[in-house]
Length: 326
Image (cartoon, rainbow, N blue to C red; front, side, top):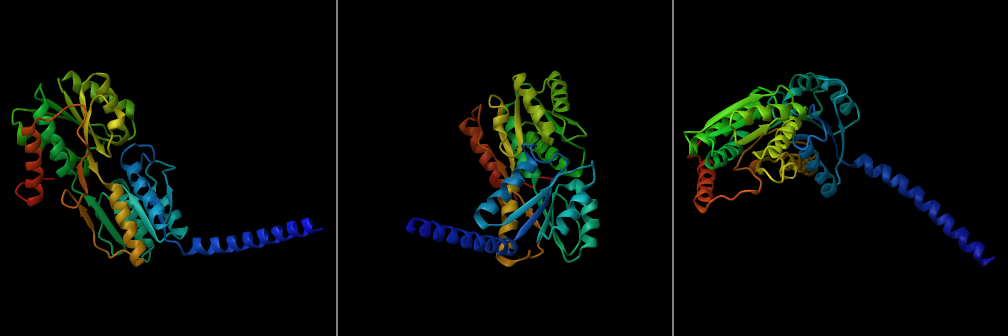
């Protein structure tokens, strides 16, 4: 009889505790800050832009308890549907990840003037939109300087996902970096017109290699992954972009131009967490703000003189002695 009483008591306690936990969980979820993210056209798995941003939001979730949800494209070019779904879901902040959704984010932001938005990689002038942009040209300048120092053929390559103002910032900075240390080097560029085709990236890399390119810098999302793979296959050096992409070509990826989107996403989440809203000031992140930089240099070594030159270039950019043009 006593055993049955103990069992019944435990059962009642478990039921009551479970009931309370569900109510408390519901209340806690309702009180948590919620962020919705509309991903760029390639979406998760690009091993670059989207994945880096996602990593920053995961860190915000783990460290701050923020909840986040995301949408990927169901139909090419239709960002508006996903953005509206995230608004209607009741998120405190909606993040548009990428310049390609600028036009549709404008429509949604105008339709929901009380909703807070963030646009990454482009700038629109609306009171409820905070713009986050990077000085990709500064980080790309350093990549170009390394390529210019180490090239043996005096021909280096660049592959852009699309010929757009944003991707031109990568190219322009890269070209200026090459020219700063090696005025005799030639920079050959190709624009794929696609951020999501690794096979196309391999084909373009093959074309560049046939033109004697011995270093290639892709800024092309998943298309750039194909560039890196082909470069390693042919024994040509390459560079990663946005995140540390060494693991994509551990024999030939020299370093990567880090575009710290994860840091930016965590900063935005922290401000939202602390203040309940964003202050409305746009973020422009370069070398000085830890928005861009270089991953560790691997697979080859810089001489002490070359290391000194890279460090001097970084100091000259951050101090304003060198202005890298967009």
